Image (cartoon, rainbow, N blue to C red; front, side, top):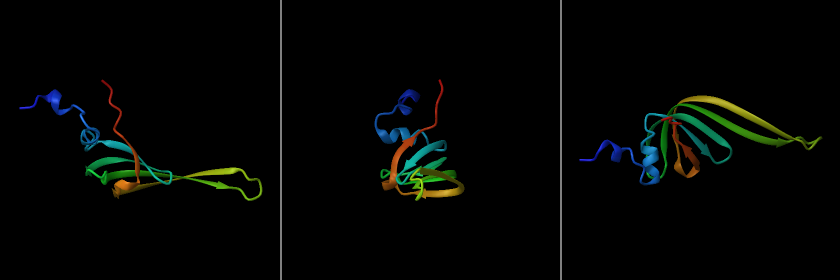
Length: 98
């Protein structure tokens, strides 16, 4: 029988994801999209189902007259979201304090 300490050990990358089930995580996606939501499920491809999601999309446009960069962020909330794993760049577990 495994001890409690062995059960929470991180031996491979997906163990960190497993320990974050039912917790809010941060996911950075391609094309400057960021998600924060509760992790309900995942698989080895990093396909994920997130709940109570806040999505932030950052777009940068160049002004035609001044050539200045215009940075826009768009936020929306989504009750449930399926995230396809091939778009995932980074997954960050919740901040844990000892």
